[in-house]
Image (cartoon, rainbow, N blue to C red; front, side):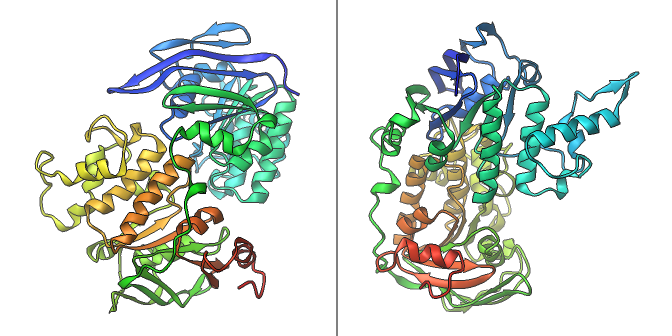
Length: 497
């Protein structure tokens, strides 16, 4: 049961390069509660958390912790105050041990020398607190995603966290792994630590949260006890008058244009054996499956990023890309699952990112003043930025994802391979992205969409192909098949079609 107020942020404002990221925002968190922070990408959540954890200095505002007004000038100061964060992109050092990662910059010492035995024992104790059954001597690079997640939580506990911020912790976890993380979160909260949980998945919010704070356009618009509010109500507050995916009618599946991808077979021995998938122009063709089903592997093979035995045609002609450059030259683009490490040059400008695929066919970089197509793409996709020279790292997650898609529009790609294109995006950003995807398909682009989100695929695809353990488990049409049938095929149930 949550208790008295522990954290209060009032009148928080921050402006970046002409963009008002926060405008008199507020946040109150009680001791021992799980407070969920909701809002569209660009609503101000990330900036508010960066201010709380010392990465960004606010223009105005006051932060109180346990009744004391504090100034958090750095992440180190935040840790000293007991404010710790588990980022969506887990910031661990792969080549170091778990124990080393738990105590980076604050190793226990004896006579001025790192006390390795003490560090190892304290790390083991922290791992035990979060129910982690692996050695503190294990290298981070050898851990699973959920083990890394638990390592991050354990690291937070080693600084005696009073406030634990969890930023999209479920983005790369299976349902079973997430259940374990939720058990740990509840135990942490019951011990008196307050948890600030950020997620776009409503079912998680209602499962783990006590209250929810809703942000929109840099402001705090509502605070609710989750037991007294509905999912639809929260979504309405997040979006204002914007459309939601729930309102979207099913694609009718009848609009086709000659040509597209015909995947007769793609084989990677022992990993993937796919046959009988077509992705016609004019339609959005879906690929869905659980973790390890082969969705991403298939798209990588079609993009020439990994070796495979391929019998594939594109518009009736043999298609055998020997590299991503070869695929790009044939107007095939890939929006990868991990946008930051694979899809973007995060420290370069929006303009540089948008024109990057086009440079594959050019000898010199076009003048920004003369090269106007990126501006039209920014306008068409509704990318929120101060200018084309703004660094991509300064954009919200939703706007970063639009840049990844936009660079293939500048390049006029006619085949788009989309791998979890809405991962980490809120409902409104998803709707915006799919509006553009549908327009592209309707104009003749061949779209192959891979996702693990069944409602998303069902609402936005004309045909759904289910992959299971590297093979095609069935093909479905939202207009004539049910969600249950698709789910059964995802789970490997025989005769689900």
